[in-house]
Length: 405
Image (cartoon, rainbow, N blue to C red):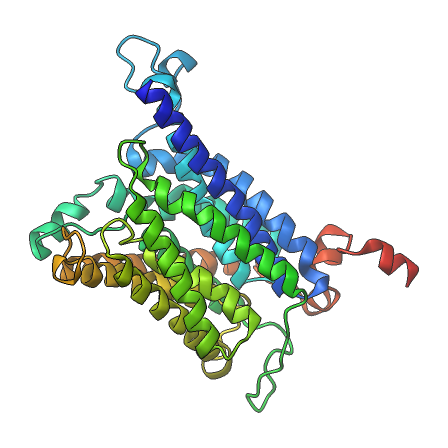
């Protein structure tokens, strides 16, 4: 009965995080121009399929040393001496962790939108989910390469990342920075004098829908990271809720009531609270979420206006910067002195967080640099002008309107 409950619990978590990929899709659909909306939808679903193959055949073994090249009886724990848990628990655990792995290309997709070639990006997805992401995932969550022992020997506690502020979001965001820089800005985004040409979101309701889907699914992302009914705690749910509210309100104020900032502020708070959601006091989670909401607005504006980094959805500020903030903040607000449960140190969180950033930043530039030199990663000028929908998929999001026109 206990095993069956755990299987169902993790399966529901996997389904909730799977649903978040619809959120990624509609967040991008609502942000990009109409001529690139179909491409956004196709990228997210095909990236998920490619991620499934890459993680099943290679990535999961890289992270945890487990492969699925055994009989179904072995995989479900029915065969005598099987290393797999009963009732297929390890199989739904794979499903749950796969949805995390597939978030990596979904994050990157928003940064490189409107000018990236399709097939090279699918190749990048395969490489990232088979090798790059699981290598760091295994270091933190799979006890690989002695990383956690190393951090504990220096800092007095291992690196704590309960639900992936660094492992998933930080890595995804800093990989995306490499992709965005290697790809270059959208044509016409910046004038020769350095001024920014505004490209407003195409559909605020779709953007908001994407944010809401992600927000609801995030409670599966965070709470079900316990991976067992016995390990579940309402503290994770409460902290996620407080960080969500803090992110929204901070983005509301700092972003001057801009709807794009407000809806992304919710996500910024949730990104940041992932790491310490199981150990922080709710007021600490509120502070972490509010800091993330303000950080996202600042980071997005800096990227677009000062640094001339054309990150379309702001995935580096959202996942990269806010993920880094969350990983480090767990070492502050998770301390018993600030009402947390302890078991962390600031130094341990700093080492783990910066290691993840460096790992992803180097990986992003290497993977996309190689693809740029071999396959090419960018649509040509005419293709970009026509839009990825017609160029790559030969249909627009509104074909009936186009026909009548």
